[in-house]
Image 1 (tube, rainbow, N blue to C red):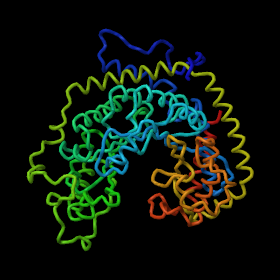
Image 2 (cartoon, rainbow, N blue to C red; image 1 turned 180 degrees about the vertical axis):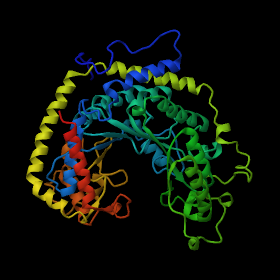
Image 3 (cartoon, one colour; image 1 turned 90 degrees about the vertical axis):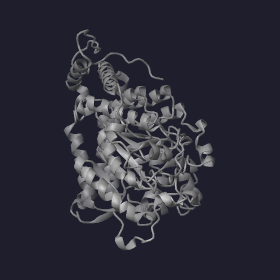
Image 4 (tube, rainbow, N blue to C red; image 1 turned 120 degrees about the horizontal axis):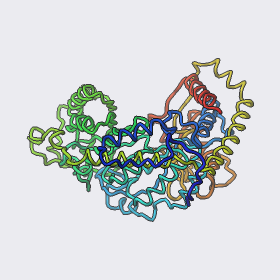
Length: 530
């Protein structure tokens, strides 16, 4: 439980209440005045190093960097990024979703009893949030498919330990109250938007309302743009491309521009085995169509200065002259569009006109700034003490690690062209499920499944399987434990788990790249000391 903090220090330029209620002042004038006050406060500083736990996070990052450079499993650190699977449930049932796309799997995953318990969340937060920089919410359900009161508990821990949130969401449940609660603590929000017209969107994002969803997304991006620059998160559209929405690609870029989203990440749909009823959705069935609409989308992305990540066009020699138009296939999600569907569509600007949105965005932005400024007037003395104690212990340990490994670190600096196997997830990331099961990356197997498939058979774990589960052990014991370390050693030696072999995260990097990262991290600690 959170207790009221004693007033020990003022972080803002004024100690009076930050609610501004001058009768003659417009909403926009109120917002501008609050923005000035925020920008003059300590909260707006770029390095934020004076806030509790910020320097501790940098020290932990340095330990992770040394651990990676030396491939030394003896060095103890904590995850920089934590995925908290707060829920596996989802309000949609997209046809190609492995978790919620068919009735059998949806029944399993849409069980709210498998939501992460708040007592377990509190334990994870106390153990790991002080060291973590980023907190990601559920990657297998809709993270906002929970009550506002429960979401507020999550945000309280994020605020307490000065973390930032990465949110992957379908956008349908992004109410004004949730926007107000989330926006100040967002690092990035990624919206799964698989269409830019109502009929396409609602048939692929089954259970959604196109206009309501787009208004939600437009509202949060507008709120963000009204806030001071240091509070603005990044936004991205995640587009799962399939046969039914290939023609939407250029319009998706127009949609991103209208929503003021500067990044689009496009990936091809992956179907589960035996999903022949929608087998025609595979993009490899529509190579010529993909190449055609990809070029149109690329031109629009360049025009709007949008970062568009996509798979390369297919080689012309690989394209069959007998490709079947998606509208003429039975094994599609959508095959009933009229031939003149796209020629009759209104423009994005004409289609998405939202009355009252600007006034609502102004109101939310004002509430956010007033709340931040009022909260920022006090610092919980117990948090400052906890942060300093953890920081002192971590600094002493960092000095010890550098002293013990100084010669080896120097020798690596003299071999800058040597290459090593590298994956960002290996020494940075932990995905924790409601039952304590841990995953080493977002796409890979969990520790329990690897125990069952024999991956760890050649490892001497001492027979303690609890070191693969966070409910039975601490976060530190699992992250620094034998299962994680064996997985990493196999990866670094060129014998990774099967999932890693063709993963884009599996890369060769020059040792100089890792050494440069380490130097940068150590420099930031020195610069922010004291």
